[in-house]
Image (tube, rainbow, N blue to C red; front, side):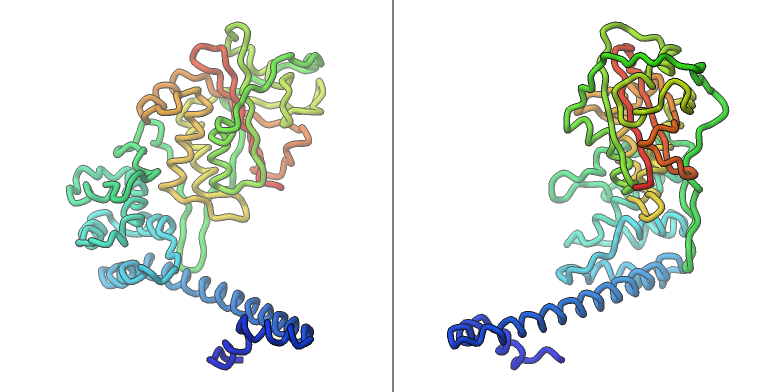
Length: 370
């Protein structure tokens, strides 16, 4: 049935009232059922159109040449008021992967008083930074990160690639598909597995993570929409040396080690701060098995935020302060056969952080099997 003025009158509030008052409630319900069916059909058509639109945008973003970029930007310029999500963070990621920065800067720096390119520019700036582009070499991009209408979350990020961000993993995408790293694995180097059988005595320490701190620690897996993630923070009565942490972790009151016993698999390795950052970045940016992730710019943001919370950086810390805390923190990457983890290939990990003063242990556990 096509939408017409007659249809509008059929489904009007006044008509429904009249028919109900005349004792014809069944016809009112029948009309409601018909509308429900039409809404379902329209929703399916909308999903189909959104998928088709995403494919067309992907073609324009990946196809080399000035004309394809011009036409892609035309979509963004005309989208204002249309209520269509052109996924600027995804488009920025594709552009950064497939095009040279020098070819992007000119077209994207054209005058845009309505701010329709703001989100695309902001995301693209950080995508290029992560790929090692010196954005200072392109003065026109100085406006790309200017906050036009109040605070933007990406404005917090550093304008230059940090030393923590030098081993960055990205997906590889084409018009017809994509490939990415297979997941996370515990390295063989730096292994500090505690001897078995381990102690069966449980620690008396209590989780002290506030709701806000918990949310910030799990920010990376949440952004990547992993199956499940949890966080715990334990404040210690005395300083703990790093070599005591591997044996202490399985005794803590955490769901990710519950039921492990004294001989269950618990494998752990010391890791440098940049390896932890990259693990968090891959988690957030590429997402889990059933989600495309937050992409590079927002993946960068949430990796930094999780790193900050794990390393006990102040809530208002700058990226430079977070980096300093992260460098002074002792980092561990672990896996276990506890029931909380599903132990499917490459889909589980734990991170433990011993604070610089050695009086605090923060833990993030993530699984991509729900």
